[in-house]
Image (tube, rainbow, N blue to C red):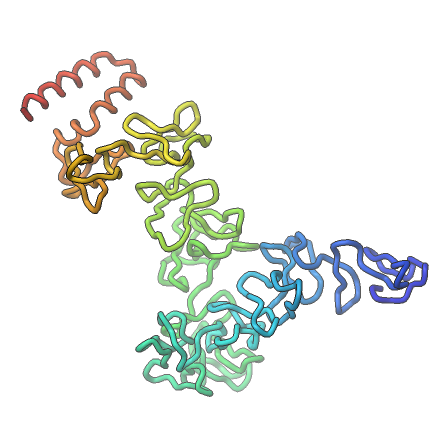
Length: 421
């Protein structure tokens, strides 16, 4: 048993521990930590673990970063960096739950300045400053930069908004007391009507909706703005949400659980929302706001490579009209879409483009192509051919060996040039 007096007799010490010759006390082997409940040795702070077969010592949970301190545990001294995901070491040296975290198991462990609300989530209390309504306690809205209760709800103890007894989020007397609503049950610990297993409360209307991983038919069934995946028919996690453990396969068809256990977009995914890093590791958000591989990376299809690049000999390479930038992406040459410009010495030289805010851009509803030209709505036949015919003809000749295609294309270009003259 750890901490037991052992003299020089190792048999007194339990498995994974040894008798210290100097102190004559049983100590855990290197890297392991003593369990304060059964005094055995097991994985401690930061040690590798898996949810399925590793039991971290008491006070710790298996997290994406390894064995981590649970909410409410002391994080004093060297333990400050070992609080589990979703918590931080607060001013009182206690691991406390951050904004938006589930406080069902630890109602008193929200970070200082937050409270465990009617939905059992850590949020900003009534009367405190706020930026957006979703950060206020359930049933509350951010009005004039202050959290206030929605009309019809009352503020309990001046902190949280509470509906009438029996309604979801309201008080209940006992587990036998029937809460109003098919998806709500009376929590015997908190004496509050909460959503049943598999559901979570929507903070703005206190309705119970399905959590990520639960079966669904429509998006409206899923909580927190999540969508119902069309393939798995389950509520999918949002981009950037943690997918550690049992939710590793619930990122949806357009995303994957990345190596940092967050849902990230697959290759060719739309990364136009620049507020968060959306692309999975090894890819980046290119000029067209698509997640693509770096130049030089192994590839199998053209749409895996960045704008301006193609997959040739299983490697992403920059094409004609582009140049490699930062050894990562393809940069448009002078005059092409995306290139820097000005009206004096660096004009945009492709039809369908103009210089906007110092950058060549497609106009009139046109869209940018893989080679930094324009096509799409409003594009005339002459525009498409003038912008991309040279590149298209060269590609066709190389791929198909059609000499006739080259001759016809060249003749057509000459006719277009005469018309423009």
